[in-house]
Length: 169
Image (cartoon, rainbow, N blue to C red; front, side, top):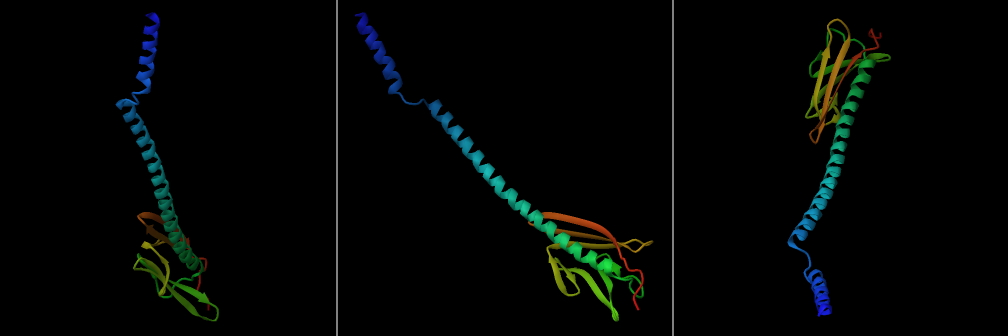
């Protein structure tokens, strides 16, 4: 009889663990862990994609503002004082570039439909703000340019003074 009891007890222990499968708690725990890891991977992938997209837009806005500033600064450094008074107001700038043997060439910078224009040539797009300020006691011109691409805004401001002090004859 004791051998029968040992054998029955072994059968009960083996059958209890082999035929039952997983409990509801174990299944729910496994599903929650898998969904947590899956959603974490999805979120990481989404953040990497949108992060690179935002970085690209920020670089593009930066590039537009720097290009606009480079054109305007180059012409201010090469310009001579205007004849007959100031040629600057808050949203446009008129410069006079000396040309050897000819009258000074007039360059007009202004903003039209989010494009920076030099005379009537569109130089840079996605410029949504352009401002020129001059100090009353010097020839210093402060330029502020703002560019935006996909809601990424880049604002750049610089002060420049012309290198040429007189109009060439």
